[in-house]
Image (cartoon, rainbow, N blue to C red; front, top):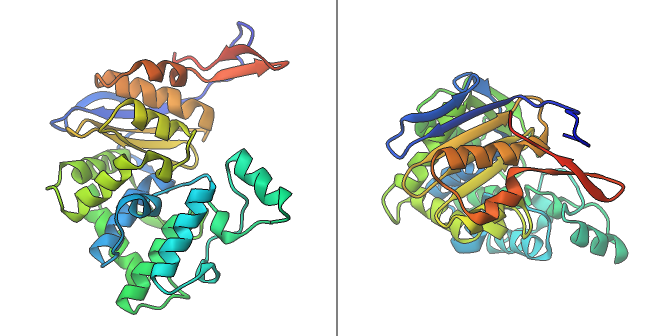
Length: 303
């Protein structure tokens, strides 16, 4: 809505499931194939942990991250590489500037430029390289879908989603992208938090939830949601995908069909509230604000 008028309309697919796995809210074709993009990172990290990746705490959270390139993210990615005896020259993700405005300005002010270590997936790529190093797998080809690392990740995705990967594409960072259903992603996220304490699944889920800023950014909506609802895990993906799960197994997935990111978080908040997961802090995330002349003149509303 802008100045009282409907300016644009975004259509959303949404799945919300109860603690027992039964569907509570379903909108759209949630069983059709979808590209979850970076929402799959916790599953990719699980495949790495199962393959011998020895990370804990914030560095394991960073392996799941679509980060903002804040200084602590960059330092963390370098730590992962250093522990494996590598440096950022081994990364194969694209060069980029930090996503957070303050971090981006500081890089440019100091004479810096685009670099792979600033790219939002550098934590995942550093962890992929570390996994290859511990197994003696080739480093240069770690993004090839036939590489042992990517085969292990694909097997993990298929196991937890209980689906065969229907197709393999290329994500924005260059890593293999697996097409499954929104239902499968929700099923996989439930498997992470409902696993036994200390298991690889729970190690990933617990690290993610304990360090929300490391999985996205200090001011990102996903981190704000997790801080507002302790026990919640939320992972966003490009082209407006969200996946979340609460500690008791309540879970959901969201896909905005036109890829419009501004509609993603309001729909995710609606899914959380449909499951009885709410907090006062969610009010500010439930309606995106639109501005005119620097002043609020409208927002996103669910029809």
